[in-house]
Length: 166
Image 1: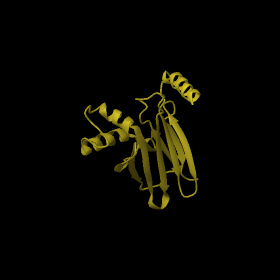
Image 2 (image 1 turned 45 degrees about the vertical axis):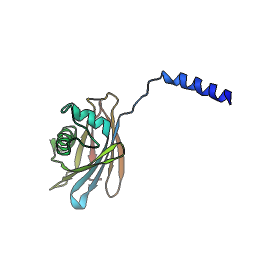
Image 3 (image 1 turned 90 degrees about the horizontal axis):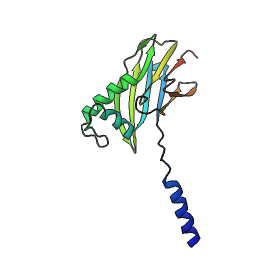
Image 4 (image 1 turned 180 degrees about the horizontal axis):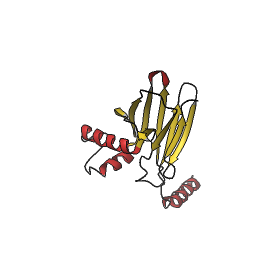
C-alpha cells in the first residue's frame, strides 16, 4: 500500500509542472433542406470562449446565467454575422438568428437561411474565435437528403465551398 502512495505522489509531482493544454474547437451542423429552400444551422460554442469574446465588447457581461440576456444576444448576433457567413455569388446572405440554449458548458445557437432560388454552390465562412485563439478549429458538418460531409476550418483556411447540385 505504501508503494502505491509513493508511486501516486511521484506521478502527481511529475505532471504538476506540465501546463494544461486547452483545446479550442467549435462544431457547426448545417442541414440543407432543398424542398424548403433553407439551411438549418446549429453551432456549438464553449461558454467560456464565447464569454471571453463578448467581454471584449462588454467587460461586465456574463453568460450562464446571462447578466443581460438581450444584450448578450445582440452581441452574439453581431459576432455571428461577422464570423459565420453563408456566401452566394460573393455576397454574404442574411442569416436569421432563431435563438440559443445552454447545454452543460456549451452554448447552442440556432440559425436559418431562407433562399428564393437555389444556387449551384455556396461558400461557408466560419472564423469564429480565430482572433482569440491561434489553435482554434471549427468543424462543419454538412448534410442534405443524400449525403453528409465534414470539414475542418482553421485560421489559414476559414472558408469552404459546397456544390449543391450533387
